[in-house]
Structure formats: C-alpha cells, structure tokens
Image (tube, rainbow, N blue to C red; front, side, top):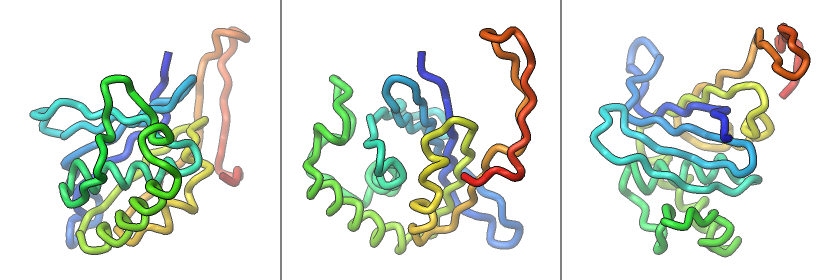
Length: 166
C-alpha cells in the first residue's frame, strides 16, 4: 500500500506576511511506485494522477503545475493516462528535458509559491537541490523530530533529525 511522503502546496505568498494562500496541493505517494496526485483546495475538480520519474521528480511536479494549474504549457501528450503510464513511457528523455526547460522559463513569469512539506523516507529529501533551481518563491520543510510505533519491533522509536544532512 502506498504511503504519503510529501505534501506540496501551490499558491501565492502573502505580499506582507509570507506564508502561502494555497489553491492546490500535490500529494506524493511512494512505495512500490511513486505517484503524484494533484487536487484543488476547493475540491471542485477531479484529482489528477501522474507517475513521475525518479531522478526528475521535482521537474515532474513543476511540469504538473505548468500544465494543470497555470494552464500555460501544452506538452503535446497526455500526462495522466488510464493505464497510469509513467513519464518514462510517455516521453523520451529528450522530450522530457525539453519540457523541463520550458517549465522553468514559464514558472519564472508567474508569481507562485510552492511549499514542499517533505516527510522522513521521501525520495524528495534527495532532491532538495533540484527544488532550489526553480525561480519561484518556495519553502521546504523537512523532518525535525519523529516519534513512531513500529509494528515490527513492537516498540516506540524516537528520532531527532536536527543534525542530519539530507
């Protein structure tokens, strides 16, 4: 069963007080196969699910934003398929990297803020430097402390991350 490892909020920063006024969220679920589920905060639209690449997951998140939230990029192919094809299957590497470059240029023209709330065990913890490459406003939250019961050991485990490098 898939587990949520990150919640990404998309919206605008408050012009005086920081924070975010979100309009959408993307939920990253991982385990056997990662998936990105885009939902509007108001709940009026059906969720959109794509299967991202592993190494370019951040780029796939921003591509979703450009196509489905900003409605400014037409990738030429459907990102969401009934068969849940991955981005690897839909686009060649050259096509994907071309779309990623278009996305970066497009994102630079919009005043959006993206907040990455990344949980322990998320693949996005390895891609924080990729997030920093995008020109928009962003915040990244990472694990600080965790208390969790383990069914395997039947014990509660307490973990502090404040000295850990991601």
